[in-house]
Image 1 (cartoon, rainbow, N blue to C red):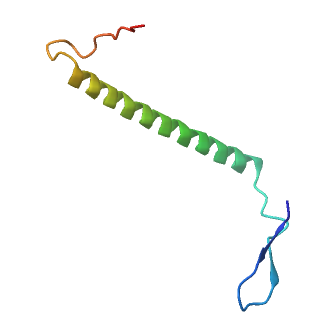
Image 2 (image 1 turned 120 degrees about the vertical axis):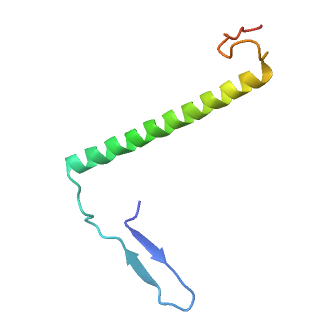
Amino acid sequence: MQDRIRVIKRGAHNSMNRIPSNPIAKSACERERETVNTVKGWIAEWQKRKRALQIAANSIMRSIGDHSETPTKPLVVVN
């Protein structure tokens, strides 16, 4: 992959747009902290999605079930 990106605009000079070859290096601690924060974000999103799905499933079960029965009645798999 090339380190440079060539940008061509109408009526402008054709020049190279250079990306610095030595970006600021991050320490191992900073990279680890970023990784931990990313994974924690993924876990938080997964838990939020799981709660939303559970609430939706409970709502559906209550709406289709007999209202005299408890909503925690186990489902039966029919083949």
